[in-house]
Image (cartoon, rainbow, N blue to C red; front, side, top):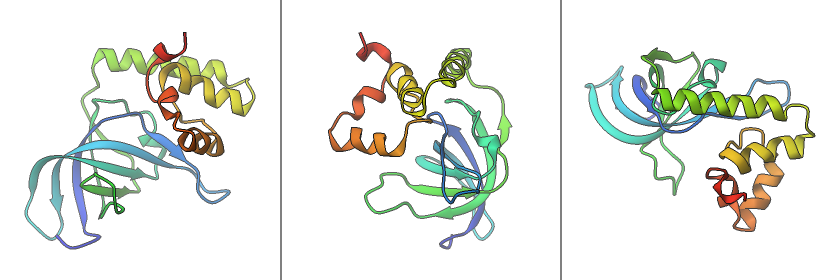
Length: 167
């Protein structure tokens, strides 16, 4: 495979997709941590593997995926940034093609997270983004400056796990 090769990939979602906003007026890109389990490059042999990767999905179809969900897509294979322990980054423009459903436990957890997100909509942005992070580890609405403050002070663990840390 060559750098920036186009390939069809098969993935298993590892964590909730996270929207990141780029330039004003453009739609968000979804960061989706995945296990890359199959690669069918345009310019090489098919590979079966099990490595960590990151999907950069520009279609909103990536947002509702849940951990454990199997999907496939066609995208551009990119090298991860230096220091990143992932094997690859896959840039995808189209929505994922879903293969089955996540487990009932992941669907239930996704429903609870969605309910908490809806409940936080009327709250001011700083609180509405922080509360789901503290309770269920959902940092999708967390203000980037506040997220950086958590990182700088070494307190990211407060919004990286379940609500067991808020008693």
